[in-house]
Length: 183
Image (cartoon, rainbow, N blue to C red; front, side, top):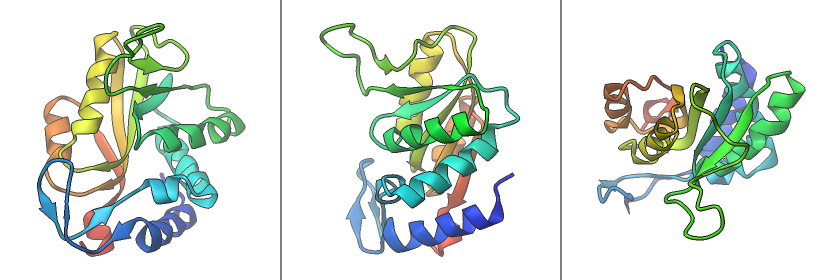
């Protein structure tokens, strides 16, 4: 379970730095009365520390082999997890999923230590709206035979993405929902 002090500290940081309460057009094309940019906190040293500890708490009993997600939202989260997971004795590897495979070099879509069929992975992202970014990452790791244990997001906008992912057989755990911030 998440430590309350870390969770509350992260909530305050997200509320003051990651939310912009103004009309915006989202990547899905939908309009919203707020914008959430989790990178403003996941790229902040204190925010990265808090996020990494909370996610380690969320995965410690899941027998996870690897954690990763689609670039860009997952990149700072995955980077923060490394030292904290190591410090806490969690034997996991980390990965980043490109939006499409490289067209040169090794032509990989998944970067990091090679994942193997049968490995248990967790997919992370900063936000879930329609679930599109998490779906791309899930599809990429499933294509090589990995089992997705769950998806974790900093914030679930509660706009259908979680239900879509659950319909694909992916359990979703969010640290917060939009409702936690009065949205």
